[in-house]
Image 1 (cartoon, rainbow, N blue to C red):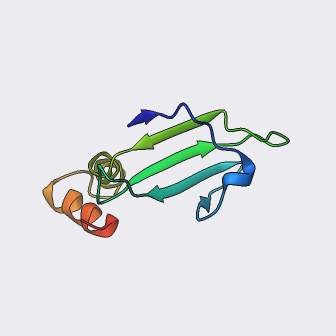
Image 2 (image 1 turned 90 degrees about the horizontal axis):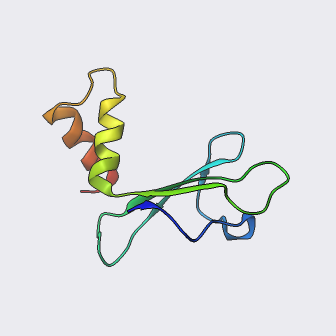
Length: 87
């Protein structure tokens, strides 16, 4: 997935999680990844277009989530993170 060339605009924001300071997380599905991927983007204050816009496939997202868990990434935490994402 990687960096998205189509930057998000404030009007595009629908079903997202706004963390803070303009950082948004969004779960999307596609024909190529039935489990969905995660899009993370940042829209600076007083701006309308994202300056950062990346897409992370579901397996990589599960790896990220399990890596920052208390137990770190192992088979159990990775499988739990995958299950929570919808695998």
